[in-house]
Length: 487
Image 1 (cartoon, rainbow, N blue to C red):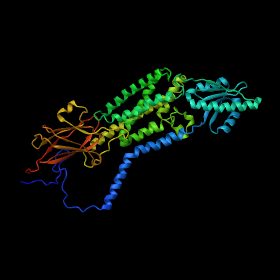
Image 2 (image 1 turned 90 degrees about the vertical axis):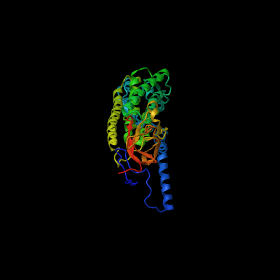
Image 3 (image 1 turned 135 degrees about the vertical axis):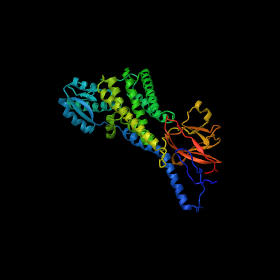
């Protein structure tokens, strides 16, 4: 009889092995250098702090740059004002002296043309100096704070012009050509309706990542249905509060926004992995909100955010809804096309992600496969891996993602075999034991490649790599040989 050597390794593909989980050291090791050990501990502590605090540090810096910078002192930038051609040049010089770079004069034929330029969205405001009382045409739908700046600026212009003409003040007549809904007193209600469909759309993705028994297609469908519900409820509540006028087409626009955010965030998961919270929050909160023109008109934020306005989904949705509600459908189509482009890009990401997952699964059993870190949202509690009772697994929630059966070399079930599952960086995720039928089950595992170890006191341990994919339950059986057997 020949006994196998303790260090002999088995075949991971079949689940059989002849190596114990922990082999004894062949030779004694010298004691570690205290200085080296202390340096390693400090380095590991520093890395732990970086992994733990990168997200709040990112959000802190993001809010300072993306909120404090554009909102602390909003001033007008190149606001287009329609003015009769006869006075356009002199008025442009006067505006450049008072607010350099703040206003761009657009010459038109007369007062009616100035008004039409505002309602047609060719200009933000229209100004007619006289010869009677000067008149300012404004659109509160473009933002209450911008309207206030226009009134202050052109009141001063009218008074100065009146002093020059008649030696006295000239009262400014303000005409609102695009009044907003009665329940939207500050003109920002539309922004908060859009925000209500943006943040939950991102949060849904982070919560769906915990639904590890759902496949990619299932998650896409759930996000689509949930997005439709968000759009319907947001529109209904906004109408009930009289924040927006009534037009059911807005429901479709809100739905496109939810999909642009949620489907894009889900599509990014295979590529940005554990950095998804920073990428998604950076795109759809830190960059999208200041550039949307909803809270502060886009003409009053710095140039970087003005450049983002035609690209980001929130800004395009707000402009599409403004055009639908207040400007007779003017310029709605281009903004809707941008939202559709975001949705299309999201499904391109889904396709690339599916290809990435198939390749990762093919590499999952390779010896040199590097486990990918699971996606975790630092702002939310993530799902915890757990062992399930195998004989009740079919009737329990969550459903098992990893199952298997442990037998001896003759096919008889082995009870009380310890199943250890480790993940990224060798971290133990869960530990289970087999039942009377030799079965085990586990759930709550993130999409990654895990290492499964089966060990028992009287048996040689077996090790296998198993690729865990959302919505695709994995199974791996082990056949453990006795520690003493004939070869």
